[in-house]
Length: 225
Image 1 (tube, rainbow, N blue to C red):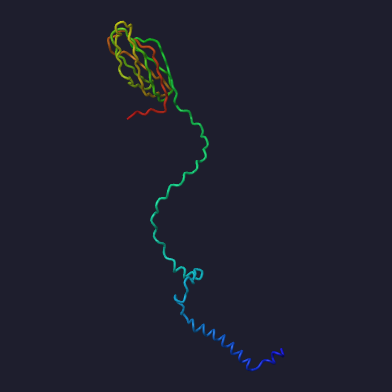
Image 2 (tube, helix red, strand yellow):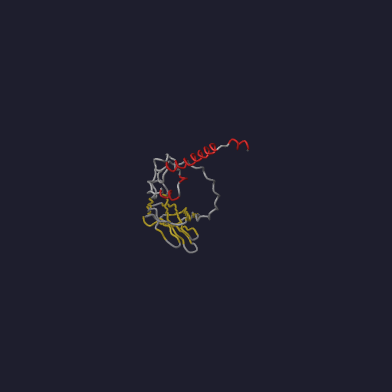
């Protein structure tokens, strides 16, 4: 400490003080003279020097405009790849049994000039059909068949059939007649009947036999338009 004091002089101290004043005061003076108030503009700011993080919320709000109009719908994209097949579902419960039951009757007794055969059925809708074999030994016979139920009738002949006398050397002539119809049976049930008869001709020996009838129950009957 005594050595430092011995080397200090008036001139050394003054030089040091002047150096401090020049450096400190000169820097402040230069900064105030080089950047006056409101003197920094776009020319003084380097490109990309101001980042969003340096902007205030108010400044950011002024930069956000209203939403633009909705753009046009884009083109339809390509169909995607087919997905994997899903798991098989559980087996459903067995449904109720349908109404399809068949009722049948056969009778081989001979009827002279006409014959009737019936089958008993429960109430419901039915598609019925029946037929008979007929014979004659003289003249000719015009024949027809009709199906009916115990609650309604139907003119259901397939068409009138004409049976002619047997040719020379033959004992008799035979043919088949029949009918088909859709019928309803009401109440607690009833019968469906097939009736075949000779309604014209000169034969006096017309007979019917091998009579058969089949009635199949269906859910409903829908007439064709």
